[in-house]
Image (cartoon, rainbow over all chains, first blue to last red; front, side):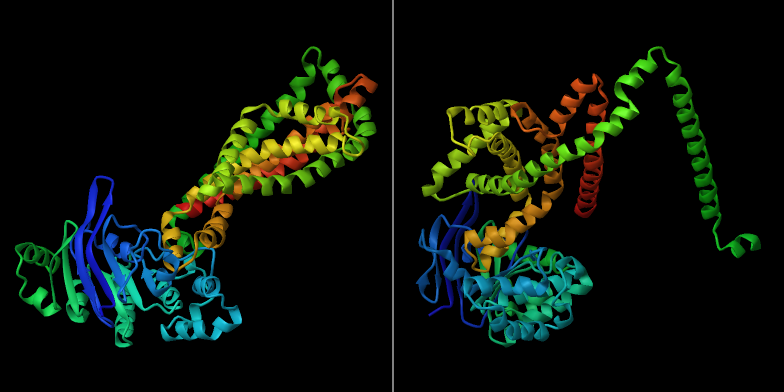
Length: 243
Length: 277
């Protein structure tokens, strides 16, 4: 059984078709990178998997269960699939610790005392212990993004979605955030990334998918996509992206 | 130049200091001239004595001011119980207008109708209709008190405005905050309560401060239906002394409250503008 499986996923915004029949399988513990130009549908695809966007056609399966049935309560699914965004989207009126505690407290009904040690450990593990009680505007972009990752991990998700999480960061802060991803990979987390970090995708991805106009037009191992791309569109994109 | 370095100032700093001193002197001199002109010229205008006697009579002011202050406590009282009621009702109306569940559709309609009606009618008309009209139905004491129904009229009118401001605040929170909260598995209601509302309320504090100041002044409208608050008390004294000074006294009392409050609201607004940039 695949961890995540997409069958002919179609997403439209009005007349504009953003995902045009996407098929994708992700195995447990795999890191899959979605690459392609801006507007190719990478972000929208991630939002569809997390049920933030309802899909027009096709189906999405998590552990073999269809999670794209219209009318299904999305909360249970979202608790299993964490998501991190390009612009961090931390809650500005809460400290890093409160940001992280909110969902476990509300969704799983755990108390602060039950959560405290566990969350402290997470902050420790991602070298944020001294920043735990800071508000987001007191943190650097890289720290904010790492807090956002910790916040998603606190729900103990089975799958993590990363939507261009380094695009809004200063170049010298990108490394810290990518290190976190490698750490998660080594712990066996299933991850899907939309990314413009080609070098990172080449080194770390188990599978790379190239999207164009809402379709995955080529997919394969990173050696295959970066070494011997078959489609001319992929070649052209990589030639520009790796320049 | 050694002399400049000794003073620890750059050329530019020294130039700017000189400029500052110069503008300060000019501003002071010009202000003194204008005030002197006012003090000397205004009393020379024909009819000034009459104006002074009618509006700025020191003995009348001294006699009436303490009583005016007493009457002002009535304003403060009405304000003190109306303001929290307005905040709560305004927030509820705002939430009702954003309700998504089909079962709550009537609530949405009600919220929209409420804001349309009470924003569309002059405050004084609502005060007359409710403040005079309802006790006029022959209710027993104490339920015929104009304090209750007059305050209710203010609460209804102001809730409509306050609700619209809250709604604007809710809209001002970026949709990505909602996405992030939903992605963590929170329900719509939890997202509103824990993520959207706290930010929305904080965003509209300066605007709501201005509503409070307006309310403080509009409490005086209740004088038309009975309660002897400061405006009505000043009117009594005006008739008694055949002099307008009590009104000026009342205005002074209002200004003592409203000027600091408006300044504070302006300060909050300016700070928010800076933060947004």
